[in-house]
Image (cartoon, rainbow, N blue to C red; front, side, top):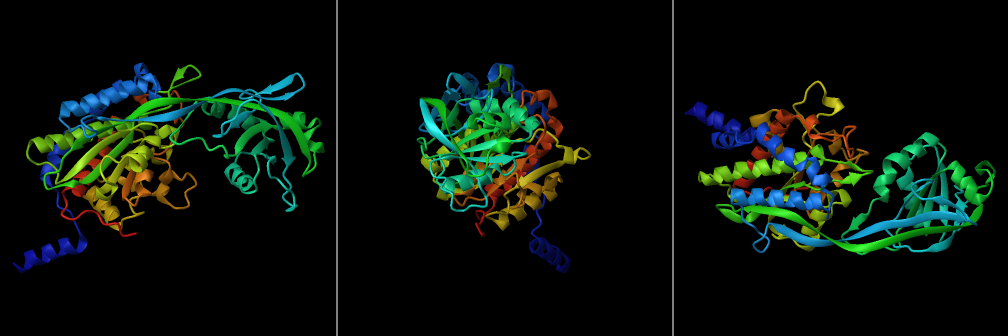
Length: 475
């Protein structure tokens, strides 16, 4: 008896989890074959890259809703699986600089971006930044910065905004870097943008050009232009706004004992569509996360059918508009939370879990875990113990570092829950060269690895949904 008491004391002291055979049984329903079957549909050419508000995204929404219906999940949005809302699509028209009859055309000779509404020609004033002279008035002008690389652009744009500048003109000395900007990023910036809010017409305007264009605007070689020198030029940027309807897809499994407390499991099912005539299938980003949510839903439903349903309710939610600025999740948290945020205990967010990055080429049994300790040490500890007990993956916290320059913590849908003081975990496989490229296709997905990661999320969700006390916010 004394030995048993000692062992139980160790279990309590170290917070160890004993394997729950019931959980293991239902985790086995998550299989690589099922994940592949779903992804073969959602990441196929037929779905045209699942661009928000477009045909492929609508098809994906129907596929997900039909899966939820087939499982018997409740339709929680007034009897529907769809949480519909409108976005504003801003499409860019004619963009150019003009001197007399000669024009330099946007996305051929330079790149332009802004969320401000503009239309028609206007005279703008360029002024070459003078870091030494603090007395220069930049208000209402475009500040010209010169750099060899794009690094530091965000910081300079922030300074320009604080100075009251109308815009930023970034002149790149590195022609190779400039051409890369035109060919690789230009098509994304030229595509219609979507916004949840009204336009911010005070937003800073951004031009990225090479030294030749800068010299052409000033009318002399750029090397002859002095700091603080100005030039007045004609600029045109036309935007057209129109409403676009889109939808999050929600399915609810009601809890047996604490139905008002909600665990939310999310992924984004949109991607970037067709660019330059090429379909961007988004198999990893985030087809992998979306089909993981579908498999998790099925596993929990199977448990429920066997009277082993979770004590807390679980909301399975695939959101739209992530690629446009976390819009679908922000609509849910900020404008129409179907279930009160005060009753939402945790968000587990799955965004890119189907690939292996270069840093783990020798061992694919890993996952990057982001945000688990930001709001709740208890959640972080639970995550660690679940992994040790069930899956034994390497939990890599590289991107959880506050000083990580990628800032992934702020770049996926979990952040809209975290900013509302809801503990989160973000599961991520890391970056790869196919990110946002037409080469992010299903044949590159490692489904056996993906299955292991899905089981980690399942067991973590199982513990959160079935423990006696809800996860504490302790940070």
